[in-house]
Image (cartoon, rainbow, N blue to C red):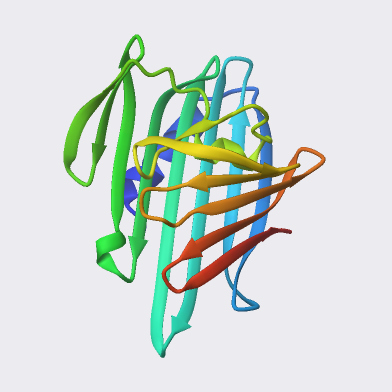
Length: 199
């Protein structure tokens, strides 16, 4: 079951944005040629604020073992700068569970907490997060902030419209764009490649 704190936070934050524009995208999550879940990305924005919500839920079986994973990521940006972000992941393999928050507390200064460990991010102006990859092509971007890992990740331009995101857990992913729109994500996982295709 999803963490009620993050769901409540999401509803409260969306409720504070009036006269907002909304954008939604859906992806089928595919593993070994079978649909195993759905990825949903939603952005609600006004002139100065942006609220993004990314949810993923998957169910499959590997070597007769059921595998379930659900995650949720939210970000609030003001004038293009990250003000607050949350990340939650619940997986069959409990070692992969994550609860993380990042909050801007000063000029280029953030408080972060991941699975109970707190510290600060100094001298960082966070303007591009992983969740932003779902809404716009990262032209000229070489580093993006991961709310799930609470750190900056390297983004490599591989080919025209293709970008590789390097993660500390080696679950690297390939984002592919057509005409500026994200059409697919390929993620390397310990049980094989998982592909999300835009619906």
